[in-house]
Image 1: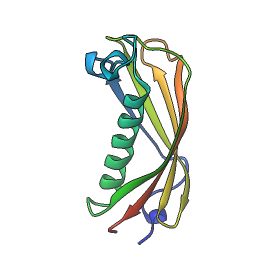
Image 2: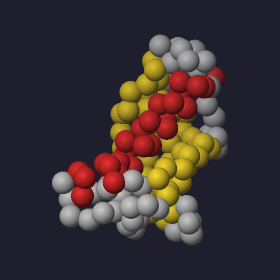
Image 3: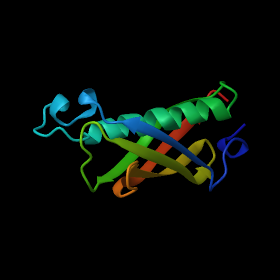
Image 4: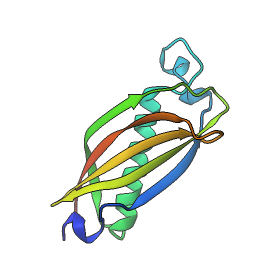
Length: 122
């Protein structure tokens, strides 16, 4: 089985996250109480991994191969963001996701990028 049996370009999954104290740049050693970039990467990796796990009937595991993220706007602690993963490309055992992060309150763009995962065990 390859990734194309579980994914096709255009599929979308979204999830909302709350920017709490642990997800701020300050909690990661930075200066501000805004959403930290490494937290966005963590959230999108968890989303993609969970999606792959679900789509493969809990048989597939995955490994992140590539992350590229442009963090374009701050989001303050206490606010929420929505992360959208969209299947952009499926090739053999690799799925490429387009990533979009928007503020839940007014939908302004917070970050965008790309994440590739290799699927194994299916």
